[in-house]
Amino acid sequence: MKKAVLFRVKKERVDEWKLWCSTIATTLYTEAQKSLEEEKVFQELTLLFELKGEFYGVGYMDGDGLPANMNREINQKHKEMKKICIEYVTDAQVLYEVNLFQKKP
Image 1 (cartoon, rainbow, N blue to C red):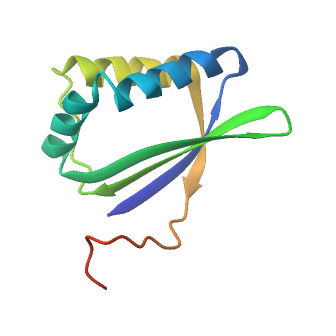
Image 2 (tube, rainbow, N blue to C red; image 1 turned 45 degrees about the horizontal axis):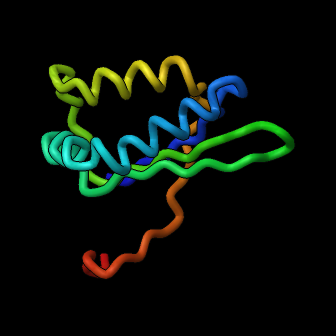
């Protein structure tokens, strides 16, 4: 299953959100991989963009998306950061994905 969502990043929390995402991508990368493995998620990513002075993000995941193991500190922190930094806007439609590791449907 491929899933994407659009969210708004609260203006006063943009730097905090960017720092959290950077931490996932660096010092918590291995821990994030373990969590995705448990959730049977092949790939997850977040994009950030600015539009008319507002910051928005797109979150994308590919996989089964089983519930996160909330005993993991990374998942607890991620839930907290999403609660204080972002606001859900709407689901996004995945139009295509091409990668070298996926067979043609």
